[in-house]
Length: 405
Length: 146
Image (cartoon, rainbow over all chains, first blue to last red; front, side):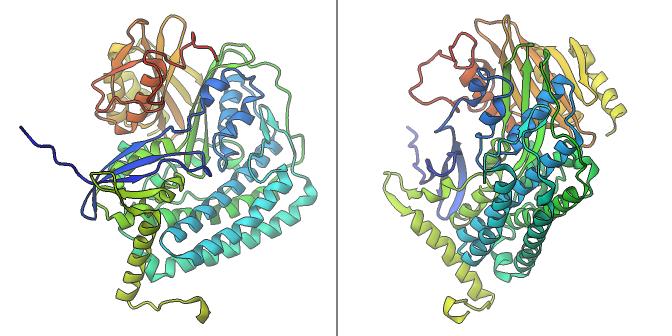
């Protein structure tokens, strides 16, 4: 009889109360090297697609903005794009610009949040402090425009609920300019830093071929040299009128994804400035009375990638089917390609590199065949940080201490 | 690829389809029966080639529909293949995950919530439903109350 060999399993997950995506990664390990990965999701399935079938077309945006707290502008916008396609209506120009401004502010705050947490995970808390400090004024701006720091609830079929007052324009330009300058400084610091190079380059590589097979989107795809961006490829809102670039990097490692996100923040700053200057006067909404029978595919580029909504209407006041595909749904399975062959100490940052959510890393535990915990979250974080400091010594970078500053 | 090239490529697979619909300038719906879906999907993903976006399972009154959404990112088109599964008692369709690992999760999800069997799927475990959810109850079917 063949004896089954038990391999050690590294359990990453499963639940975290702070973020709504809950994931459980089971890494099979050989020594320090990961040899296989299994992902389990849906610990907190809320049945939003089914719920949506019981709501009226106008109520659905409030539901889908709660799919994700951070992407709470992208999901409603993708849904609205689908419904407006069915109804054959176009929102007024001013509404298109308001949509762009809110979505780009969302992108800035989401990317800065990621950069900060990525720094924290590799033991580089200075980056964490900086990035989150610079993110705060963006949330303040969103609150001033929409009334909320998240869950803006500002789009509706045929336009927007609230306008951006013209009096706010000078303040917005001033604040966003500041965010741009600080992000530029942060980007230069990251690009110049030998430790970040040593720690993130060549780690968790997702090749272009694998990226296509796993159908990944957003910065995960653009970090692997696939320059796809719905904002440019299938322009919605006012993106077609604005001048900006799609950022992509060919390497496919964690560093490439970090660079893509940082440069995208700078592009977002550019887009917002241009949009605030160019925003035309006029109404922000038109009245849409009925949604005819039909079907539509709406897309929006969320911070993590393409958000896809399929809506079917039978002519009633509710959707008969509403399919939602959030970008993490295709980005997360790509761990199968990017984590295998990596060190355990690099898994924390590789899993974080697609920006799925950080819930997983906080519940890290290494167990052996008898389910005994041999490493917990604290010890894994320590291992990750020790590796950083080892590299720091190897390359002769100075050890930074708070007292020296 | 420009629009004309896309149309030419799609016309190559037309014998396998039962119809082509265009709702707007850049949305194309291809209609086919379930038995041809594997071949058409393979053609769309590998030969055209298009980027796989996601699939949608729908409980229509007299059949099940599986919609495979693809994107042509150069010209901003969404090409959707609608495969109709006529057998309501034991709905089944060929899995596309063997050549498209990005579809593995969504096929498991459709199996969970609609009870569609994906033949030759590499890993047909539950994805969405809890371990203690009763067998044979498919939450997205129309007969299940909201």
